[in-house]
Image 1 (cartoon, rainbow, N blue to C red):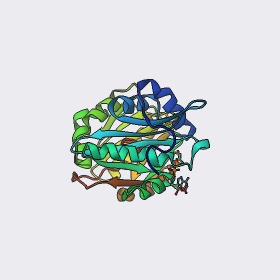
Image 2: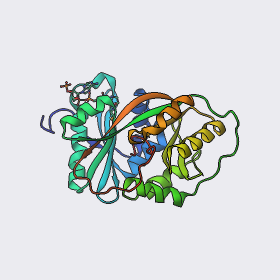
Image 3: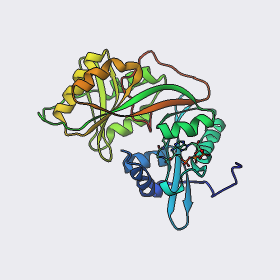
Length: 273
Ligand SMILES: CC(C)(COP(=O)(O)OP(=O)(O)OC[C@H]1O[C@@H](n2cnc3c(N)ncnc32)[C@H](O)[C@@H]1OP(=O)(O)O)[C@@H](O)C(=O)NCCC(=O)NCCS
């Protein structure tokens, strides 16, 4: 399909945050308005608006360091799906990433992966979204972590600097960094659940101990996107009462231009990587 076919693609601005939130809420996603504001101010969000309905579809490109970018918030309202809208919006993101000479990454839902595969994205790993429903039995204070340590270990895991993102996420009301015994994680509010990640740890047992401390001390529910390459943690999480919610497929468009020596146990969320 030619890009001029179909309804016009426009660039959204900060005032579109509530309409974006309505779309992600329709899809039962955990993003809140602060997430949308971040994408709308730090990234490029493409959208399609229909006169009688309003915003019906979106896709965002978030630039990262070292020639990388994250694509996310690919959403089409239910009544307008299977008309090629996501394909056109992601194509617009690819064109922008190419113009900026960036490799584009994303974490795809199963439905999204079918769209991206056809556009030339290739698989680059998987994660499992884990959910813990309860929490807060002890309401004990968690050991505070240090932002500079979080930034350092995230850099080692991603291979490029994400300071701007992690400073913003950790500075939001309700966010905290926790660390103990060689494990460190960021916890932040989502629309319906607390999101834990990124989570880096020396080994699976220190990651499991930190997660146990978090869910005992904080009120849930909690979400964690566990890197399948760190699946040694999955049995411990299942035994502790975490359930497996959905898979995400990491995909890449362009050449790998940065790798780090550390494998994170969990990412910052599918929208951020
Ligand atoms: C996934 C989503 C964005 C697709 O939007 P869309 O505008 O319907 O996608 P397109 O029309 O561009 O689809 C292109 C092709 O992808 C495939 N595809 C899209 N949605 C699919 C689905 N739900 N199941 C199977 N294949 C699908 C089909 O091959 C489709 O071509 P076809 O309609 O000619 O068969 C939309 O279903 C959605 O918003 N879902 C909820 C949120 C979500 O999962 N977003 C993706 C995040 S990674």
